[in-house]
Each structure stands twice: as C-alpha cells, then as structure tokens.
Amino acid sequence: MNANTTQVCKKCKVDKSLTEYHRRGASHQRICKTCRKSHVPSGGKRVIIMNPSSLYPELAMRIESLKGKLRSKAASYASDQMEADDIYAAMVEEILFKSKPEDSDSRILTRATWAAKAVISKYKTYSSLVEDEASMLTKTDDDDMELVASPYQSAEDDFLYRESMSEILEKVALLPKEYQVIISMLTLGYNQREIAHKLQKSDQAISSTIKNIATQLTTLGLSPSLSFA
Image (cartoon, rainbow, N blue to C red; front, top):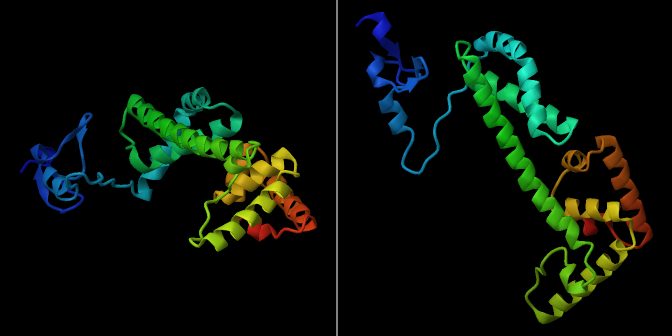
C-alpha cells in the first residue's frame, strides 16, 4: 500500500488503510475502528491513549505560544486567582496528555475549555457537599444536628450513642463557627489541603487551626479523634 494511504494502528500494530480509522480533524485517529470497538463495550468507557513524553517539548512550545489566551480563558471560568491557577494547570495537563503538536490553535483551545469545565464541575460538586455539611452545624434543632447515624441496633446502645453524640454536639457548638465548619469537613473525610483550598487559606493556617481545635476539644473533655470520627 501507498505510505500516504496507510497507518499503523497503535493497538494491534498492523499497517492498515486510512479508511480503517475514524477521522480526526485533518488527520486520523491512532487506533483502528476494529480495535476501538473491541475495547469499548456497550456502556463502557472510551479508551484514552496518553501522549508519549517525546511529544511534550513540542506541546510545551504550543502551550507557551497560547499562554495568554489560556490564562485569559482560565480567568473567565474562575472566581478568584487560586481557581484560575488550578484551571490553567488542568488545561496544561489536558493539552500535554491528549493534544497533538500538529493540532490547530482552535482545537487546542477547545480541549482547554473541556478541562476548565471539568474543574468547575468538580468545584460545584465539592462546594455543595461542604455547604450542606457546614449548614448542618448552624441549626438549632438538636434532631437536625446529628453528625452521623447511629451504628447500633439495640435500643439501649442506640440511646447511649445518641446521648454521647448530643454531648459532643453541645460542646462543639461552644467553639467558633470557623472551627465548627472545619470539624464538619473533617467528619466528611476531607483532608487539610482540600479544606485549605475550599476556605481559601494556606495549608499551614488550616494545620494550625486544627491543632487549636484539638486543644480546645481536649479542654472540654472530648477526644479529638472521637469528634472527628
């Protein structure tokens, strides 16, 4: 076959006619139709082939040439500089891993937009979870302030558990609201870096605050590990 009309499939390593590949802009995809079908069962996820590191230098040059537009796009999706930096980093990663040096500027910017929307979607989901949990601690109705459901089945154990949780919540309510929010986020399993990012504080500031919380809980007669469980 003519070299201009064939291409070696990255999956099966067979030199096949370009008609055996789906179009991708001015070129063709790197996996043939047959291999793609065999690796994407009905209802399954599409196989993503990551770029080899040998393409990174060329792609880095493309990113540098589009840096102004990428930064501007990141800023348009962000609510602050921290978010803008995170979105820009996600754009760069998406381009390095999945774009091609020969892709048009328009195609690269479109891929950057996909990355930005993915980050924003993640932020919205994360934010809703944190806000729901944080609002729980500001309620005055004791029945609405349970941090976790009772793990016990017997009436006696359940009563003792609820008594214990009621005592914990009463003492947690004595702490500053900022501390209550952080305790709430810890009970959900968020780590210090995630909390720092959400509250727009430094990792060191959150670490110091958590130590202060632990000290105050101990002073109130509570075990920090129990309160955060």
